[in-house]
Figure 1 (cartoon, rainbow, N blue to C red):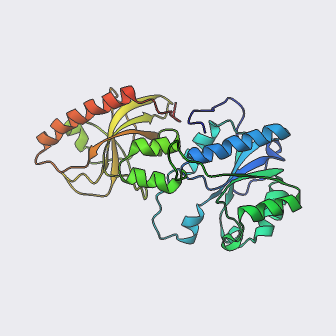
Figure 2 (tube, helix red, strand yellow):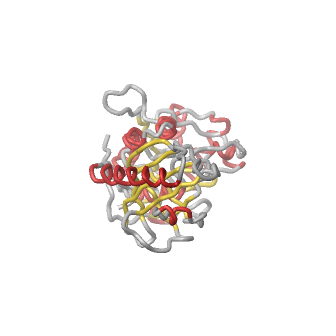
Figure 3 (cartoon, helix red, strand yellow):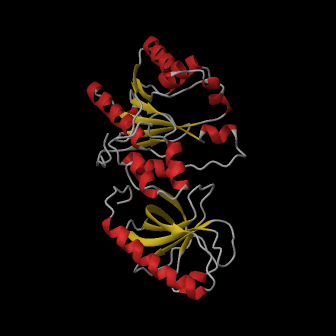
Length: 328
């Protein structure tokens, strides 16, 4: 299991939703899954699909679905997604793959039987030559399809099928999972979350106008609203990729600002040694370290004094952290 970065200069093609599969991805070997988090277990799937595709002289691709099936079946229920569609493209582009195929998860796909999933979607529509799946992969109407059933159906359809066993971190018995990463982030345990991912967890969003309070405190911030984010409220050391591709260090607060308004959760990022207008622009923020929980202070002066300490701690953590980045 590699926690490193297999980024490569090879061409990478994205085939979104109902677009036909382009010629350069014809006859591909596809790793199939939702890939929320693209964690260490998923990275083994990526390695397996690259290995299988290389042995057969085929393109290596990812097949995933949007929206996430859980969001489709329970649209009113909040869901903490670790990796949105844009973030998936960023990560998969860097992992030595030839492409990403995204198919819409809708009523038609949800009602597709297991055999039709294989014969019509995988073989006829997508033209795959084979698939790679995890040990717990289920598919088809009502999740009727199991890994063993997929292997048998692929054999009947003339497709290759490779099943990857569970993946655990060294000295751990539980398999790496997206649920474990969500639990770690909910506890503020960025170190564990990033270890399970194999890189620093990051979010994307557009910088929005706030109340400009940070300027009066001497800590101007770029503010992002994160939808259904289960990250623990607190202070973090972060790195931010700006629209021009440069990366800046900073310190961020995620939470409700209890000293002032106890409002809706907001990510407020102070970029070190930076001045500029980022309003309305898209940025990516990766989380390097958790510094402390969110607190209510008796005065703005007490808050500023603690922010000075937080900024110094963030600089120290950023200077020593060696976890791989997907933003560089």
